Image (cartoon, rainbow, N blue to C red):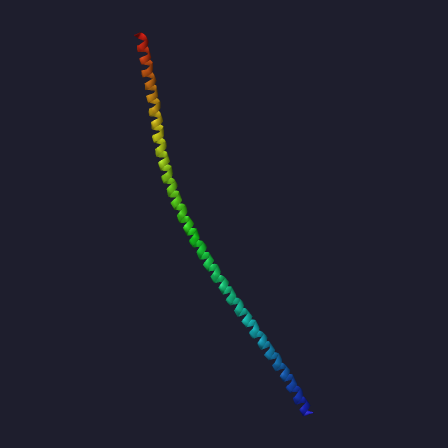
Length: 115
């Protein structure tokens, strides 16, 4: 009977040890899974950080291009304004000269008629 009790205790202890070992293996597997997931997320974070940095660099390049374009637009507008002023002066001069020529022509016609 003592032998049966000891055998029963041994069986119970063996089963408890097996359960403990199974739980230990399961825990190790879960820990490994979590470590892999953390590693994967670290890789994702690194990738996102690189993407973010690239986007920031692109944004800076586009900002610099926009500033350069804005400066060019100012120069072009200034040139256009200068040419418009020159054109307006030339038109005004041409109108004045045209009126002068009309007056001269009219005076010549009068002078010829009076002869």
